[in-house]
Length: 116
Image 1 (cartoon, rainbow, N blue to C red):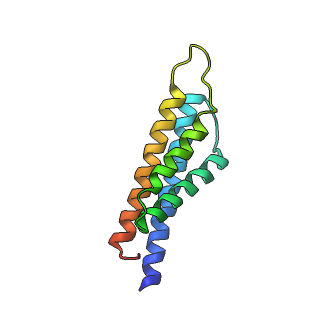
Image 2: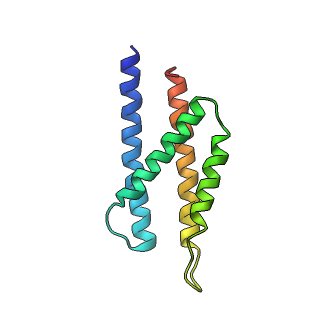
């Protein structure tokens, strides 16, 4: 029975991650004219969501503060072009909000299938 739940959860996560990769690739295409998938960013996003989901399942909501501090430290090195609009800031903010929301969704699925 537990194996069935693990397979269901893994399936949900795999499908969701594929949809997210496609969504972020399309967004990057529209905003930055980038073609294709940035596999490095996809893997980083998957690891971020796995970290958050694991923290939430184990009742460590403070990990979100740690995650936010890491993201902020990473973001401080990026500089926009002079006179440019804030497309990157918007993309970064929305991407992180979606990522956290998805991790919360994964946690909800795990809790409702009583896998924890």
